[in-house]
Image (cartoon, rainbow, N blue to C red; front, side):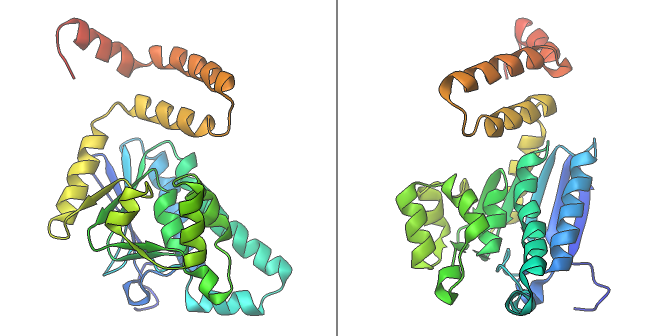
Length: 258
């Protein structure tokens, strides 16, 4: 790819913001430039009042193959402080989808491996083509899937997580759906149309209700039962005061059903 080719593409339309990792010749591997541009794109779409849903995908055959080979060389040669800064930049990417107000959907074709698998599953929802593959091969080269482990552990059971980590083998989209790592699997043919339809339906939901629901779901992670109920009380009151709720209740009382 030419040096001036953007490593991340962004489009907007019909309430949907689309972010495309654009290093297809490198299987959309993560390097410093891509990580920085991706974070910037996600923040921009989250701040856009016309965007209600964000879809993340990869150009070419794969979603994301993990760290770029050049990044691995930097890891091997860099000192502690440089590695610490690099890791912090990457950690920000993995935490950003949860912090965003809008729902973030990963649309996965091909392989989502290592940090690429972490990126996909860091999104709120994961849609996959039936030929997609997911995996954490880091242990095979003596590495540890350290940050993405926090994401994995929140998606699947302990024994499944351990098997994926130490087995270092990719699993199919069907297997990933079965263990709860992803949400939906669609046929390869028509995958893009299925993703568009899914995102369009999500974009029709009440923006305030979706935002508040997302906030409560992640905020209650790690809370005890009583604390989660109390947090739900507070947010319930906030939801009752929104324009979307007032309009929705009015339609319901007039006989219109969702």
